[in-house]
Amino acid sequence: MTEADRRGADEKRERAELERLRAEARELRARARAHPLISQAQGILQERYRLPDGDSAFGLLQRASQRFNVKLRSLADVVLTAPRPDDLDTLWFPRRVRSSEPALNFPASYRPEPGNRGAVLSAVLSQTLAVVDTSMGNVQVADPVRGGLRLEKHTGLTDDFVDFFAYVGDEGTSCAAAARDLAQVTVEDVSTDPVFTEAAREQILAAGSLGCHSVPLTTMSGLCLGMVSAHADHTLHRLTQTQLKTLEVMGAEAGRWLSWHDRTVVLDALEYLHALGRRGRGTRIRRS
Image 1 (cartoon, helix red, strand yellow):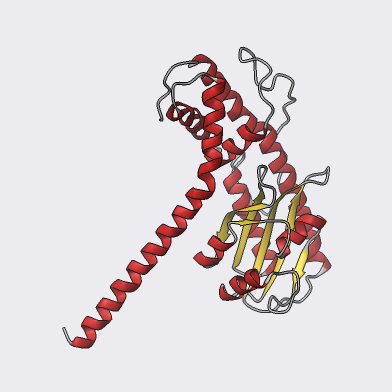
Image 2: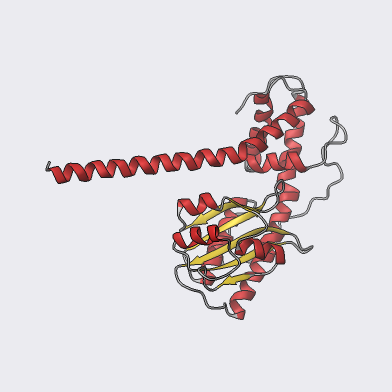
């Protein structure tokens, strides 16, 4: 091996190690964002069901999460925000009305399997990218504890972008503006549009996005439950009326579906958790 080959191999190893450390740091930051909420939920469950330790409370969350395919973070959010059960010996939500899963009239190539929230969000992202004709984008969901939007799905974007926009508040981005106004927002030129803070603009441009379009996922009552954004490697012209209408219908259908999922699948998971907690009251519950 020549000296140049050795230097090249050393540089390759250093780049790989640097990327590993960056990935590890991103993972640690993601855990740090979720950990306080999950810990708070554990505390509530430990007190409510007189459990001997936090691990038992985590076991309740974990079992309900796995049984109903609901993210642990999402369950923790609802434990923190839902009203307490009226009585530990009865159902948590005794008066709720169940409804059937709403239809999603997506093209066949984007149609997700029934009941699968992750698949629905992926389909929403894929259809949006197809309409805008780009390959970069992300989906965010409303954060019920902090407000704002939490990034949940993405494709074609850099790790730094994903890390920076893991959570966005009420100002400084096009998605925040779309959520506030319950209206689609087109940014023709990221480099000049005043909707962005300078830090957000820098991250978007560094990811190779020069234009973007955000679509709120809304309920019939006017709540924004999420956001899908398409990013382009070129400046964007205003979308056609046909494109805007297609995305508007998709956003409304997706918002209605997310509302159903929150009121049905997530509450089913909490009811299951409640039943386990009542049966295991005062005893140790192992993680699965």
